[in-house]
Image 1 (cartoon, each protein chain N blue to C red):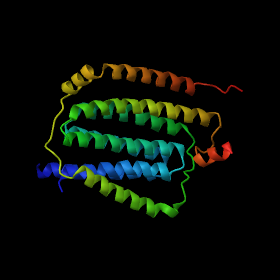
Image 2: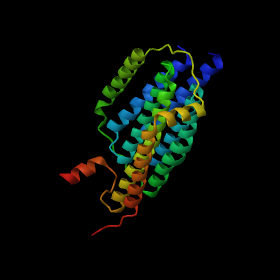
Image 3: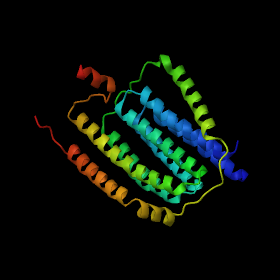
Image 4: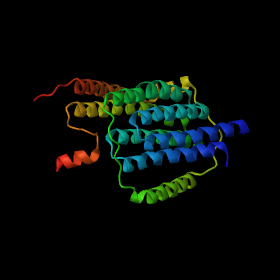
Length: 160
Length: 103
């Protein structure tokens, strides 16, 4: 693997961690949602380099383009709430747990990857269509129910 | 340690940052955002492991379905939050406040 690709991976990894931390710990909800959009874009870049171009496009178009923008618009409509947090006494224990669990997970998965694989858009779509007909129907049903439910909840007036 | 290993470590950290945010934040929207952060870390780890194990198509289809389902989850949760906020069931979108109201 070339030095340039290693450098790109390191920059993307740093961006992932920074955007994730800013999403979780930033005080403003709108800025947190914006950082979540940046996290999704960085994730899409990693997907593309790993050899999943279809998933990168779906991540950008569906997840960032509709989902995260929906969060941003919805949060912008709300009154910006006061951000309350748990008592800060056990933050050190939480940080130690995160680092220990990360080290254990990385060691257990193994730090030497195999060679790269590339899944073309056509190949992945063919695999999904040929092996996941039932999953596609279930997905369509679930999304239809979610759409109807969210619209009916959002336009519902007070019954009292 | 090469570059792709750093991606694995970053994926694990993003997953755990989301879980830590679920524990740390008491605001409902922040908890939803933390859930999405952990979701991003999880799909990154799934794709990385499949990339290592030469099973990219199975993991690709799984991640495809999970991304689309995450959008449905976001729409439902945010609709409920907006409704509760509009009906003044919530004043601060604060989990502690909801627990106090239930008591």
